[in-house]
Length: 464
Ligand SMILES: [Zn+2]
Ligand SMILES: [Zn+2]
Image 1: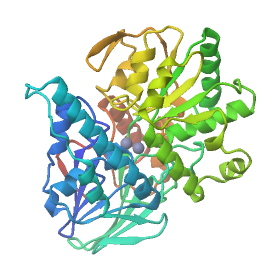
Image 2: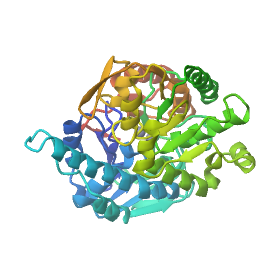
Image 3: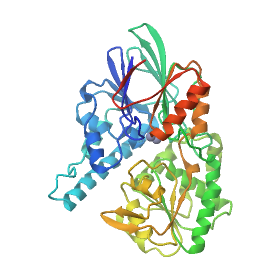
Image 4: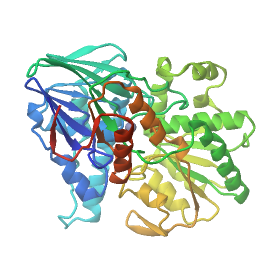
């Protein structure tokens, strides 16, 4: 049995891990690498393996850094099944089309701006047509039910507690080469305890090998509950100045959690009940509809809570559909909250809201999610004095607030606890993290367990 990471090795995005077993090739995730435009395009267009030879894809969740390159894989000859949970399948139906749309419009924009340069890719990585074809190969599976991916490889999806539909992938494998039974667990993105809406991560009690994410391998963020009062303080401060709050948020989960938190604050009288809240993202709106359908995936408390007051139908909320309405928000006078995507500010309507609001000291930009290296969002986190949006420089004068408690990722304590609960580990392979987060995490695991810990290096194969 062999494992090779072709993405999300010593970096966060582009999750792709190739498992070779019994003469078969199983790809765990096929995510999009996100970063500088040219580098991203090249990395995403080229695979480190032959897509035609992949037997199956086992997808952990719908986030684009895990699912977003499946259309390219299909375009380049992959004909097998993409396994995922049922909710992930519903989410990918809208998210991959949105991703294709972003790439089509991006390519068009580049064609207009740089008609005579070869510096920029001017063809989209894949089109909406490509995405539609790829989606036909998806197969939605239930949580907690074991299924066979290929001979000798049984897979069970368990709750990851990260976003709706996200799974921890448990692979029970009979290795024909040495005749041994082996269990490999892939955390996907590991969530947190007590996140609003979804259930807590499932604990796998025994495994031989753990392929573990390490986004926050060396950082803590307050408990999920601490985010809500912190959000209230920022909102009140901004209202006092007469400013607006701009919140870049992932369309999946974060937007819905924010609505839930705002709804709680209004209900408890912690923020004014006449503050308009705009959800300006067609994708977030479509995903919110999917949330409404998957009540079975909510945790118990929320189910009861939602019956009394549903945050997705609160009267303060206005879901913005078309571009005209979105543009009208530029002329909105007085305090309001604008939640918009994309989460890392690399695409979508959020860029318009940032450029229109970032130079006004009355306003606040609230960062509630992870920002990968070299993204516009990361520059905001680093509090640079000015940023470039659509080829124009804007001086940052608004307040920037980072609320890490809203993270959907396990922090270092959650990660340590998760690894400690798994008995019998021989090897832990770290992926989905940057070096400064991985090295200390590796050291800590080596101190509390007997497992060998490896930081996966891109394209380097290890034996299991
Ligand atoms: Zn994720
Ligand atoms: Zn991820």
